[in-house]
Structure formats: C-alpha cells, structure tokens
Length: 505
Image (tube, rainbow, N blue to C red):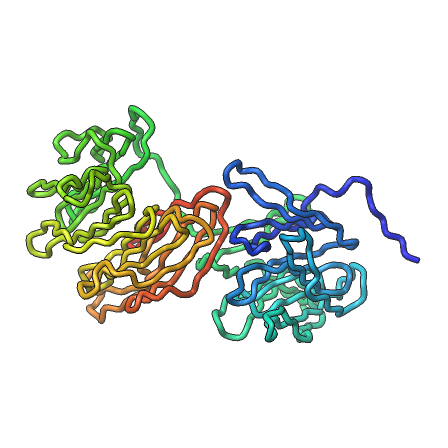
C-alpha cells in the first residue's frame, strides 16, 4: 500500500515552462509544469490571451522538462525528468487532446535523490540526443532516431558520470552535425574548484555571460549581452502620429546622416539633422504623399518611393510614375525594396517591377521584364551587393500564401524564381544581409583578396516567430533553417549598421 497526497485545489505556481510546436499544426504552444501537473497553453495572437488546451496530473514531482524535435520533423516531443527514476517522452495528440507516452526508460530508484538523474535535461540542437543529469555524479545520454515506419526510437543510456562533483547546470552546444556535445557547470567538492562565468551558446549566434552574484536572499543571476547605450540628443514635436521614419545621407562621403524623413498617412516631413532639428524646404521630396521607403542611392542621390511612383533626388530630380505604364491599370505601389543601386516595387495584385541605376549616368533604368506573383506581396528585401560587385543577385518576397520566394536579379535570368520556402504563418518583414565578408578597399588595412561572407535571410512572422535561413549565393538554395519564438506580436525587422558592419534589429 502506498499513500499519494492529492490536494483539492491544484497548484498555481509554475516551476518550469517550455515552448514548441507540440500539436504539429504550425503554431506555437507553451507547456508549463506546476510541480506535479503538466499544462499545455496556446497564446491567441489577436487578443494576447493564453488559453489552456490540456491539464494532466503526473502523480509525481516534475524536476525538469524540455522540448525535443528529431531532425527534419514537423512537431516537438515533451521530455520529462521526475522523481520516478525514469526518463519519459510524451507526444501531444490534438485530435484526442491527450498526452501519449512514447517512451519510458527506467534508470534508477524513485524519489528525489541527489544521485539519481532527473534534475537536469538538455537536448542536442540537431535533434539527435538528450542528456539527463543528477545533482551529483550521474549523467546519462540517450540517442534518439526513427525506425522504418518513422516511429521515435531511443537507445540504451550512455554514461557520463563523474565522481565527487556537484552539477549546477547542463546545456547542449550547437556543433552542427558533429557528434553531440554537452557542457556541464560543476564543482569538485574535493578540491573546491569554483566557476562563476558560463558562456552559453544558443541559436542567437552571439555569446552571453550568465553570472551568479551574491549569497543567500541577496543573490542574483545576471545576464550580459552586447548592447549600446542610447542618449537623447534632440526632441521635435510632430503634427500627428507617423507611420514610418528614416535617416539618410545626401552624399555617400558624408560622415553622418543629413535628413530625418517622417512619413504620415497623407504627407511626408523632411527634417534636417544638426544642432537643432528643423523642417527642410526645397529638399526635392514630395511632401503631399506618404512615403513607402527612403534610401540613399549611388554616390550623391536619394530615392523616395511613394504609392504613385518613384522620386529620384540628385543633381537632376526625376520622377517615374505608375500611371505611365499601360499595364498598371491605375494600381498603386504597396511594397518596395531598395539598396544602393537597385529598386524593386510591388503593385497591388502582386506585379513586380525592377529598376537598376546606370553605373555611368546614374539614371534609373527600368527592366523590360516584369513578374506576376501568385498572390499579394506582404514584404520584400534586397541585400546589398556582394563584396567586389555592383548589384545584388537575389530578391526575397514574402507572399500572402504563407511562402517566401527567392527571385533572381542576374542579367541571364532576371526576375525568375529560384527557390520557394513554406512558412508556418504569414511573413511580416524580411531582411537579407551578408555577414562575414571582407573588402580591402573599404578599410585602411593592407590590400588582400575579397572574400564572400554568408548571405542570411531573416523572416519575421506575424505569429511572433523569427526564422533565419542561409542563402547560397550561387544557386539561391535555402538551408540551415532556424526558428526562435520572440512573442505574440508580429516581428518587424530592420537593417542597421553597427561599428561599420551590417546587422539586423
């Protein structure tokens, strides 16, 4: 006979929380542990509220939970470490609204014991292995795979024990497709070796410092990340609420931006940047229309894209109007993408029109070819030209059919689709950026060869998730997809420059 204590009122304190795609329906859910129960929650992106899908008692003490997804799988499993002396793999069945037990492997005695694994869990980012560890000494690694009918399989445990050690934390290190590697923060209570700083490598691609400070009730855990302090330099009152803002240089050799361009629902305001912020007259901008995009082009010109056309501001101001095209059918520009020498605009209905700046005359030349997309264009992105080249090779387009398309801008196959990637939700914003390139002509260092970096495509989704893909700069293939859930609101991405390098904000 055994006694199990069950309270009439369920626990409300959350001890653990994870997120993932547990239902397999391309949406994000949250799983929380309330000590001895598991609860699956689903956020509503429209109202911002969280709804409970399922709550179950586990009849034990939950010590740890993590999400786990096999390579190329479409949904996440839930792995639970508890006082049962077992590692348990659960799968959420949305049609039955139940948690089904996929695997249950016993490795030790039941009860909360400091030498029995269950306190810590860590999963390999590539979806191959899971480490479960105890507070002291014992650590086990399980290898996961699929059988011939695509069912999840689990191997016998591999030991990683270390005597005379207390474990404070366990993480998995992203080593791509090399053998899985796990890092443990430990203390040897024989020789009293202490560690205070841990580099935590995550899929954010930047190292972070996690520090434990102080003792007892005054102790804290602090996270240090790269960042810059922001100072307020000037304040200027606006006539109404703006819908977009840009800063631009008049010439490429200027050290600082000269204009602040503010777009409203029916007007555009141009402000000068100096000791004070003042409105500029005679800037060349159309002020009686909203602005969709504003950017410097070439060495000494600025482009303003507005719903009815393109304004090229330079030594000689020129205007291209949508109404001049016979096939435009009085449609307006809804989206655009601009870099130093290229412009792509999207009209209502999904037609794309491409422009290049002539390398000698500086005039915008319209490409004779256009492309009709299969649905409405939600967002677009152009990368800057690769190191040592004049033009970007690809255009990224997010469509209302939950896809992002990669379009070639190369002369031999201009405006031809190169690749397609399905998305779990509608795209809100796109940024295509090259990182890791070297151009000796842009620095004071001795001249050397120009090397290409990696071209990345970042996709902000309306459900609050961020996707990152690597773009092959020759074939346009998309690979190494990664996703991170940022919140319940749509993700808006912006390209910025930080210490002379391009970055994403």
